[in-house]
Amino acid sequence: MSEPPRAAAYLDVDGTLTTGVTLFELLRFDAAERGAEQEAATFLRGIATMREAGATRTERNRHYFTWWAGRSVGDVVQVGRRWFASVRAEGAGHAVGPPGDGGGGGGVGGSAVGRGGVLRPQVVSIVERHRRAGHVVVLVSGSFAPALAPLAEVLGGAHLLVTDPEVREGRFTGRVSVPMIGEAKARAVAEHARREGISLPRSAAYGDDLSDAGYMGLTGHPTVVSVPGAPLAVVGRRRGWDLVAV
View 1 (cartoon, helix red, strand yellow):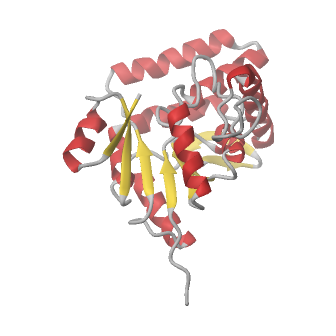
View 2 (tube, helix red, strand yellow):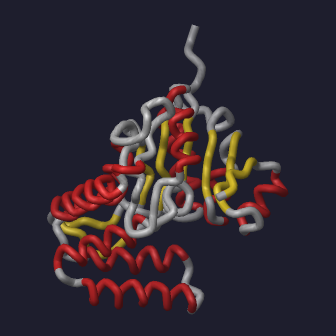
């Protein structure tokens, strides 16, 4: 008798699993290491200006990756590991671990994720419940592997569906073919489920932004993570989705 299809938990990261923006926090850390804080501040103000001018999330995501143009992939991976190690150390005194581990250094230890950003304890608890149930945990994000691979590791080897910046001769070009935002997330989740033998009706999805609605709606158990009244919370309420109020 064949085993039933597996279930998965598909989670957005920034704003859902974390309160900070991992892309921006990694950039600030990189700038601080290189003494380029002023350059980073100017760059990030430019992204904010793009948003105010009506640029889409996809357009802003593409621009973000120009920061890494010309940088060695291996070097950026190591920047990501140093950044995540530093924020885990900052949060070691109030770490979020799986239930029963007593907090501190176990589990997802080091709840801080960048300046002013932390892992949401209530969402971490949800992730741990999925892990205990044997579900595949998948991070679905416009961020990229150097920022999220260390987090995926402490979440028990979570799968990554993330933006894949263009690389030539071992260096980032600063260009992106398909940012993992909006419909790209929905396509990636559908393909992941097909490839991994996952039943989407048995699976769950979590997100905080309207752009997450597409992939969330593919699953049988979508949950909005946001303040009540936020745009996605309004859509979720109309569709009968659950809400984790933050």
